[in-house]
Picture (cartoon, rainbow, N blue to C red):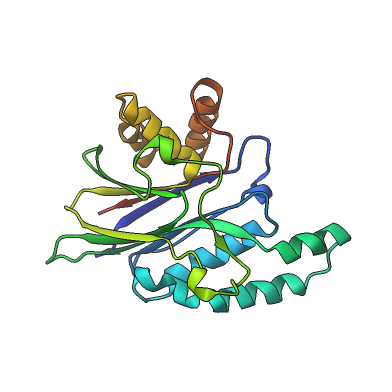
Length: 244
């Protein structure tokens, strides 16, 4: 039984869609969803994030084993960027590699069994599990104060010691039909936790965009308003919702 899936995204204020450096992918039939946030200071972050999310979604291995394909992805990334003609400064940036955070979720559900989900995360993309807009779980960060300017990252350059590759943290949980999973990049996730700690319900506010009449334009307008009037960092924003 496939879960209903929605995606909303936009680049940081002042940037064009071509400068958007988040990435996401989904296979609703397989129940696999992934979200990445490319590190702006690294080159080819959008390319690297896209490779990470596509590999997670298209693979069928357990989420805890997601990094098994990392060496292959790193070689593919290296081959891709080395085939490009770059200016002198681009050559130096290419050698530094690319970095991204990653959140992967696998949902299993059927007509006979209650939904279950598994998640793996490297860095500060966040998963929230809600029931009737009330928060049940937050992963991997649970408080706004846990965000920092130096999140864990997945790198495109292989480590000399493979055991030191950042394989992230994993968790899992059960759910009821009608529950919702929210996957967000860091700026929106941080705002949600700030709102919750202030005694407000950000997931109830976000539900307005899940109605069929709503559009990506209304989401973009709402994000712009948040940037003008409330505490939302100017960054690429990506929101994925999964209705169980």
